[in-house]
Length: 48
Image (cartoon, rainbow, N blue to C red; front, side, top):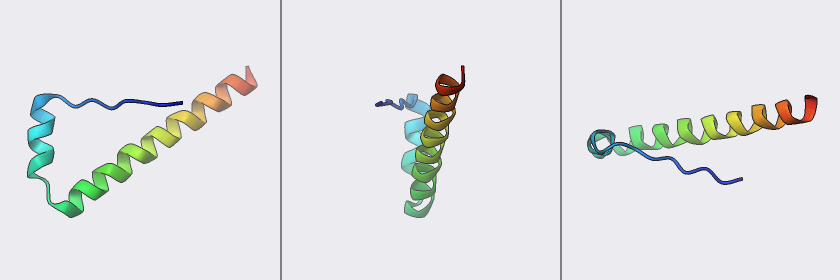
C-alpha cells in the first residue's frame, strides 16, 4: 500500500522555515500517522 502526502503552498512555506530538528520530528509524525492508519485499516478489514 502506498500513500501520497500533499501539502498546500502555505504549508510548504512553513515547512521550509522549520529547523532541521523540527523537520525530522514532522517526518516522524507523518510516518507514525501512516503506520497507525494502515494498522487500523488492516484490523478493520480482518475483523469485519
